[in-house]
Length: 164
Image (cartoon, rainbow, N blue to C red; front, side, top):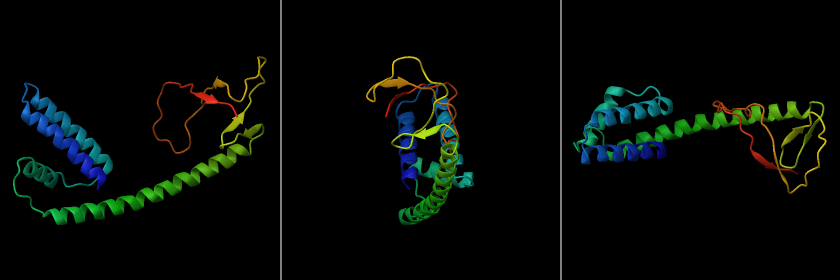
């Protein structure tokens, strides 16, 4: 329900701005808001009846009487959120199980040691410089995404991490 409320507020504020300040590009703004909304709805709520969605959007935007009561809409959205939440829990359990398997496999590899907090370290070759203290910061490169990540940025990051 929170997703629907935030989506409604976002759309409502965009539509209100478009109505209060008509501009030569109001078509482009309306189209852009619609495309953005469509993309989010496709990802978050696949299978929606688009004709009914547009009808409800038009009636609400034009302050016309709605086909469903407020109570019925709250009930439907609450049911949807509870069903969507149960799938998220299952996905979370699958991701946690995959992470545990990954970490167990990595821990079993030769030369891997685990730092406090669960960070696994493999020293590829010993360095010849001065050894940093536990309070020092060093720069390290990540090689590959953590288990369960679906999107990874293409540029290489070298985050600062404390030793120890």
